[in-house]
Length: 154
Image 1: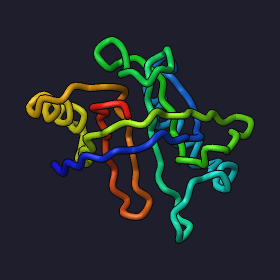
Image 2: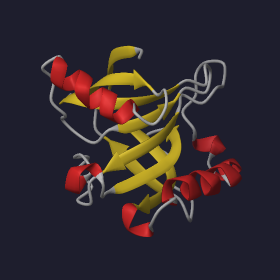
Image 3: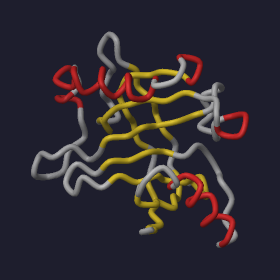
Image 4: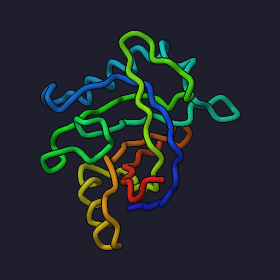
């Protein structure tokens, strides 16, 4: 399990929004929809100097949209499948923009279905507590997937 602690200033994500109330498989359906229509938001993506998108986020928040952890033992909340975008970008029709607060994250390389439990265990073993909703991140350069556990708001 690879662990990295990072600080990320507030950022924005434009994506397809859904809820655990949408039923099983809703996250996969959101990603299929977002990927099928990515050309609609590609021009809004925040990019590196070489033009690569900064990242793709499976952003999460509680139902109050306060970026607190999902409710009822992490089983109920909102999810946004999307791309990090410029802060001044406006979401096109059918898309949603979230402005995510800055956090210090413990990022755990996703390595199967136990990454979430392993990340929570790591926090507990190292004296950290969860300070917000966990975020999924995919680095488009390396293809590496991580779960980012917020341990402090910036």
